[in-house]
Image (cartoon, rainbow, N blue to C red; front, side):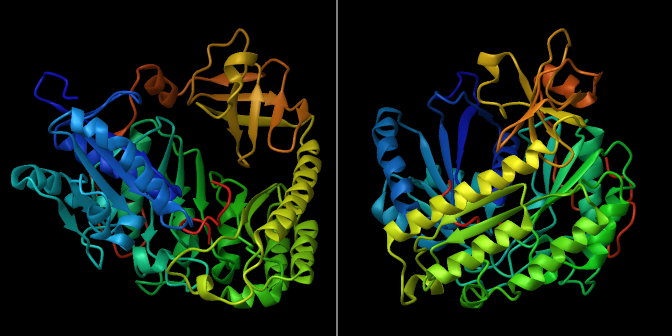
Length: 497
């Protein structure tokens, strides 16, 4: 509970996509600005915040199960508060405190910034506070942020989505797309780089439709090029684009901007044109493969990953074979494969011809086997190549047992490497040679050929991660900003369009 110093403690438990992870960084920043301090994973804090996801069929069961486990803990610790936010809170609203009356605060996706005030009000009034807004009150990136990493950061460029995919509940929970001004984005990136961060990932429900709100359909490519002008920013990634909005100017910006990584996550969802139509995906398999061809013409070394949903309502064996055919042609480095299950509140949930679970499982296993074979073949092509790695923490689950460390290559591939005799820290940059491959990672068992200490590594060693105030500078055009003192049974709906 409280630390005996007048400070209150907190813990944030996050479910779901990258957007939720980034929102949890905002929640941590808000609470720390309000005087709360984080606790260790096993400790009982004064405030527990659940940042929820609504895309899973059993999302509510998971939440209410965890809330039930927490009730006796709260009963044993008077003054403890429980808050529920995120997409499930936006969807279920007051139902949460009806089913779990020991919850103190419910807040939605549009009013994260209200959390500290809602906690205070709930405590003062000794009653639950439920506040769900229908529209965004403050862009999340204007809020303070407690970053999880010293070397890599999410930077939100937009929230919400204008698409109407029938399997996805996100637009109804996060609203229409709201674009952040370019100068504001670049200012946040520069602030992160000033703290030692080497890599940023531009984040949005549909990043390559960025600019629609202020009428510049070329804005995303311009933003990528502007990132290339930020000194000290070594790697730029983005997730997730939508094939219907993916244009040649973005391919050119990726190919021509040195710090933009040749990595692309391009959700396919299905290789069947019939199923794509039923999903309301406004492209067809031929158009999708043409995009990949143009990407590889410009960047032959690009590693392309995807999302695929198996067993969408009405999917026949012929439809599934069409997906397998596209996978064979696309040669993905990696695929996030998901079994369709009903998401309450989506059009697909009430469609006829729901595919039996056993059929979905069998198709899923065939798809995974095919993609694992392709991933392994593609990874074998990397053997003998020299790679530059940004050393990561927690990426290799067996690192402690094997004595290895892990890092990400510029194309996003995970590499386990031998750092014997080198003083390597997470956040440092190393160079090594790939010696063997597996479907989901690469190995570098020879000694390093180079090691560069970085400010991010220094920050990791010092035990600190960047904590930034909100950046509110808004500029109407892209350019250098004015100086100012980011489960496997469902589609990745929130960040995987």
